[in-house]
Image (tube, helix red, strand yellow):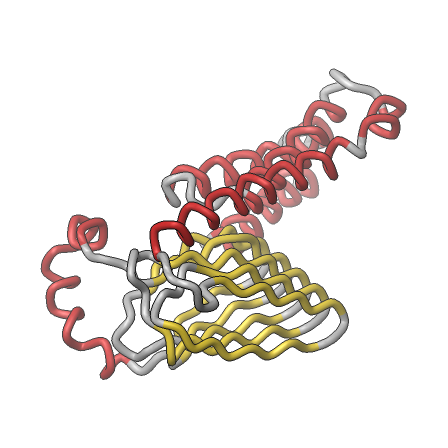
Length: 236
């Protein structure tokens, strides 16, 4: 939806310019506002569970919007751009604090969290634990595969925070898990490839209850983060 709407918006603006209906030079100055709105929307719809991707998109797009409106100069942007790195670090600290709280709730001594990073390479992990709390996956021009079919979640939902940039992430889960996707997608895709026949037990209830049922169901896994020119697949 987001990708399609962005393409339509760009096409309309180009059409207004080529047909001479209205000057469009000033409209392009406001284009970063679209990404600011998308970032805010992603924050709200995820219940602020998804932080890193949306906040970074809001910060970067908002800065370019201020530059286009001449509220900040190119020189100031060139001087202060390392603040983006500081913000990214702060968001990672916040996320790790959240993960620490989930680990405390889960209890036990076995492995409950996993981190997989793939940059121009591949990384494949398989986890076996009855106290799974979440994972951090990063794929930049690479692929990450995470197998969760031998885990259980004592305090759902477990949260997988994924950043996928020009790469691919595959997450395998037990066939009866309910997975919520709170990922900010920009020119990419997040899809659940599990056969529908394995989720029939919840299908009738979902169809009847609509959005109210969606909010009321227990999600064993929540996938959050950012996809930019990449894809995340949920499989069994």
